[in-house]
Amino acid sequence: MLDIIGGIAIVGLVAILAGVLTGAAGVSPRHRLTAFVGLGVWVALLIAASVLGWFDPGAVGPVPTIAYPLAAVLAAGLVSWFRVPRFRERVRAMPLPVLIAANIGRVLGVFFLVLYGVGRVPAPFAQSAGWGDIVVGTLALPLAVMAAAGSARPLWIGLWNAFGMLDLVTAVALGVLSSPGTPFRVFGSGSAPFAVTALPWVLIPTFLVPVYFLVHLAIAARLRAPGAVGREPVTA
Image 1 (tube, helix red, strand yellow):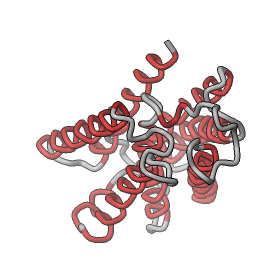
Image 2 (tube, helix red, strand yellow):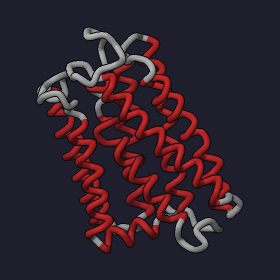
Image 3 (cartoon, rainbow, N blue to C red):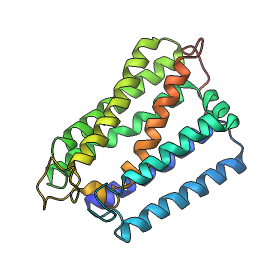
Image 4 (spheres, helix red, strand yellow):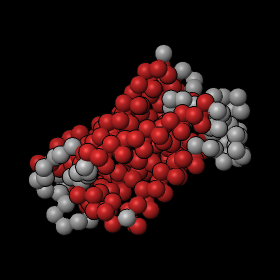
C-alpha cells in the first residue's frame, strides 16, 4: 500500500512540476506537448530499467546505477543552458516566485521518514533527505508569496536556495554511502533493503533530484539579475 500511495504522489509531482515549469517558461502548446511526451518517454525508460533489474545492487558495477540517469538529466540541463540560447532565455524569463514555489512538492520528503519507520531505508539518509526536503518545501510557500509581493529579501531567498541545494547534495552523497552492492556502502548492513533503488521511489533520484537541483541553479541565476526580487506576475 505504501508503494502505491508513494507512486501516485511521485508521478503526480512529476506531472505538476513539468506543467508548472513549462508554463512559467511561456512555451507554446506544441512545445509543451513535446516536453510532456519526452518526459513520458523518460519515465517509461526508467520504469523499464527498474523492472529489468538495471537498478538492482551491483547491476552494472560498483557505481550505483541510479547515478547515471541522475547525471544525464543534470548534464542535459547544463548543456542546454550553456549551448542553447533559446533555452537560457526561457529559463531567465521564469518568474522567481514560480521557481521558488516549485519546491513546495518537496514536502513529500516525509515518505523517507515513513520508509525508515518500516525499515526500508537506513539512517542517516532517511533523516537527512526527509527532514531536509520537508524544511525546504515548507519554507518555499511563504517565500514564494513574499517574492511575488516584493517583500522577500534576496538574502532570505539566497540562504534558502543554498540550503535546498545542500540538502540535495547531502542526500545524494548519503544515498551513495547507503547503496547495497557497492564498495562505498557505509550505512546499513549487507542485507538491509534500500527502497530508493526500486519503484516507485527510484523516480526520485533519477528525475526529481536533478530537476530540483537545476531549479535551484535557475533561482541562483535569477537572483544575480538586477531587480530580481520585486513584484512579478505569477504565471503557470
